[in-house]
Structures are given as structure tokens and as C-alpha cells.
Length: 391
Image (cartoon, one colour):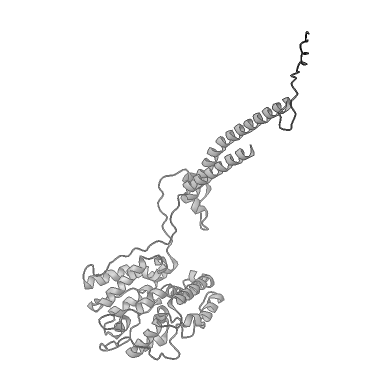
């Protein structure tokens, strides 16, 4: 029998279904908006970049010009309360960028006093007909009570201001001052300390007392610095008026630490205080050198000053004038070179160094133009960073 072939299978339909639409699928509208946003961002970035290119050089020029102005001598003069420059001198000087002659410094107030009035610190020398052997450094001697103190006589009322007078009253009655036993002020402003130099043993004891205080040397340095600052603020008018007491006190406070070292120096050959040896000598030549930090010049001297103590003392002074605190040693700056010259004339050339250069306390110089350029570059980077982040 004939078997008919199987019926053909129904044809499969391969219809493509439409892709499912999602939020991430770009549409024609989305693509158009994306292109528009990209174009706007590029345009904004280009515009920002153009402004940055324009503004950065302008900023650099502005900072450079302002910096040049402020480092110009006329710029500094404008800040001076004594400036007398008129507009014509300004316009003429600001266009002159040649090397300017350094302004001559105004004579320091204290330096003027030291140079013009040597009677501020009278020579103090005990009167002895012959030399007296200096005793050795004592060991825990019994100190006099009360211990000699500066300004132990009635203070002169010849102050320009009440504030300065009150400062001296308070300072001379304050334990923070008295306990430090300042040799720099005892030497010339204490009648008890001056008179005791007629007794070499008592002088030896008092010198030990100035070197051994209940308050540490460091704390005494801080105390004297505080009194010095207070004196400057309380006695402005008196310092300006060259009041002898105010000026000499300031110089003495400035020299406190240095003169304490000087008073406490010991002669290694005799184990005696060098200062006591100077007091004990019938020749006052060595003694005068202890008054140099106080602004007292050395009178004509003899070969009696040619000894190891004086040489060591001058080396100490020279080191102080080369230290960072040199600018505060007003009295010593005014007297060292002359004293060294006189000592070399008597003791031989190059016995001590005749000049000592005071180191400046001014801060290191800063290239202001470089600083301005750095600020300008930081500004430029900030502008670029902001523009990139905003785009």
C-alpha cells in the first residue's frame, strides 16, 4: 500500500522582537542632549582657559609691581612717621630703580647718651695705697643682711613721667629683681656695693653672692628681660628725654647676663675672682674694663691691664658682640673698639682683637618677588582646578 509522506511541519517565524527599552538606553533625544552638553562643557572649559591665560600674567605683573613698590626705599619711607616726601619726590624716586644708597641709621638713643655723657657711669675705684692680695673664691660664705641692692639711695624725682618713677619704685622693691643681685647695676648704682670695695674680703663675699643666687641664672635672665621690656613701655618719654637714670638702667638690664659672667670669672692661676683681683690691685687699669658693657670708656691705662683676666674678659666681650644678642649690648658696642685699641697700644699689637662685628638680629632676607610669583602660580593653579572641577 502506498503510504503518504508526512505532512510538512509548519514554517517557523523568525520575527525580531523590539529591544526592551531601559533608562540607560540612549534615545535620539538623549543623544542630542548629550552632544549639546558636551559641546557646552568644552566651550566653557575653553572660555575658562582663555581667561586663565589672560588673568595669570596680569596677576603676576600686578604682584610684581606691588612688590617692587614695597621694597623700593620710597615705599619704606612712606611707612615712616617722619616721612617728609612730597608728590614730586615720589614720582621722581619711584621711576629710579638704580641701586639706592643705604639710609644712614638714626643714632640710637642709648648710643647718643653713651657718647655724649660719660658721667652717667662714674669711675668707681676703691682707694688703696698699695696692692692687697685677692682672697680665693669663698665656699658658702655668710652673706650680709641685707645684701647690697641697686638704687639704695633715694630716687631722684627728676622723671619726665609718673609711670617711669613708679616703675623704678616697684622694680627696686620686687623680689624677682633683688634676688638676682644684678652685678651690672650694683657696680655703679649701689652705694653699699661701691663702699664695700674698701674691704677686699667683703668684696669677695659680695661677688660670690652675685654669682650664687637662689633664683637660677636662666630665670634671672627672664626676669631682667621682663623688667627691660617694662622699662621701655613705662619710660618712653624719659628715654626720649635722655633721662640719665632711665637710660643707664636700660643699659644695665641689657648687660645683666654678660656682666654676671664677667663678675664670676675666676683666675685659674690663683683661684680668685678676676674682678676681686682688679679691685685689690693698686692700679685701676684692669678695673675699668668691667665698666665697658655699661658704656663707660676706658681712660689712659698702664701695663697693669696686661694680664690673663683682662685678656679673657675682652675675649668674652668680643664673643658677645658676635652673638645674636649683640644688638642689645648698646654700651659695649660703643666702647669695645676704643678699649681694645688702648689695650693693644700698651700690651702689644694684636694682644686682643680690636674690632668686633655685631651680628644682626634682623630676620633672613626674603625675595619678595619670588614670594609674589609663588602666590600668583598658586592662584593660577586654583583657577584651573576650579574650572576643571566645575566642568
